[in-house]
Image (cartoon, rainbow, N blue to C red; front, side):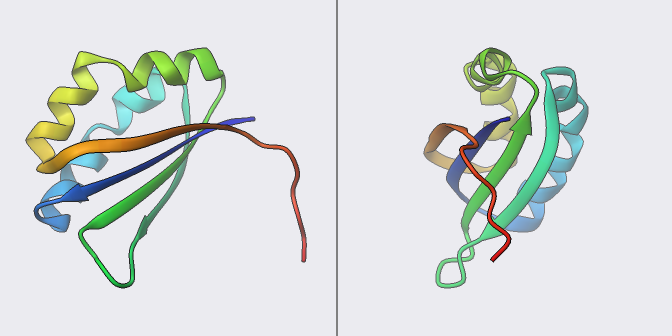
Length: 94
């Protein structure tokens, strides 16, 4: 299963979180199967998003979309995000 890992800095986490939640339908329509949010313990304005996708090609298309850029700008994302496209290679239970 493909994943997208995104790291970016936000100006105001509560504002960003509201915008992220509001953009959920667009992510789902783009093929996202949901995921997890993380914040740096040392720098709480550093946000990490790990999203599952049904198709790597659709994930890349979504990541390049003008709609996503507008949503990130409105949410207060600072600078250019780091984006990694990943393929799951194994699961561990230990």
